[in-house]
Image 1 (cartoon, rainbow, N blue to C red):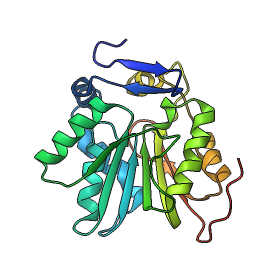
Image 2 (cartoon, helix red, strand yellow):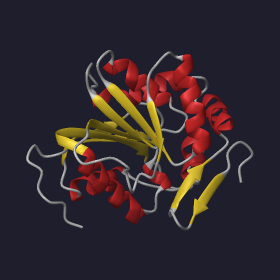
Image 3 (cartoon, one colour):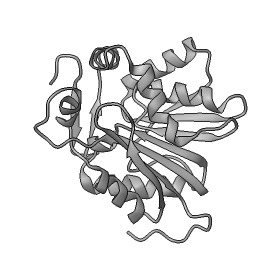
Image 4 (cartoon, rainbow, N blue to C red):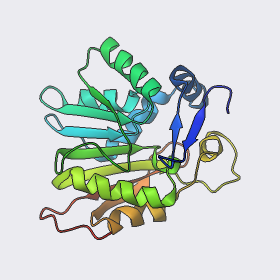
Length: 221
């Protein structure tokens, strides 16, 4: 257990659930030198969100990215934030209320999204995939494709530094590891088309932007 965050690995869920939400926000503020707002802006830029879009933020944590996304899709758009941690969601709801924003926060797992098919135009996954075992990352990508509308897009952002590195990236990699090639592969393997990849511009964060086909064939398991 870390001093600020308790991470619980659940055999039933086979994924890591982070708790101690207030400590998580404080830790991010310290590790980003108070630049978390700038980080979220850079993270969302490749998604090119527009007013009126309907967005799902999986692994939303304490809601900072969901809040930033909601401002970009106002006034007629919507954002749903989903996380496995009730503590994170409780803090996210308070933050959204303070910001005067209507965001639907729900409890759920990234590998079993509790939404019907073809519901969202955009799905966001920011610094979440490395919390999942490799097999569940692929299941998550299949679920993302399922809930995306034909032609919808997903923006996945995560750390890609090799284990053993130092600093903020190494801290978060203690909970898992991924790389740009794997991120690209799992979304392409789910039947989506890779539109763009690159660096976020903050540490070693990289992104993959992918699109669901306009005509949605069956996903192969």
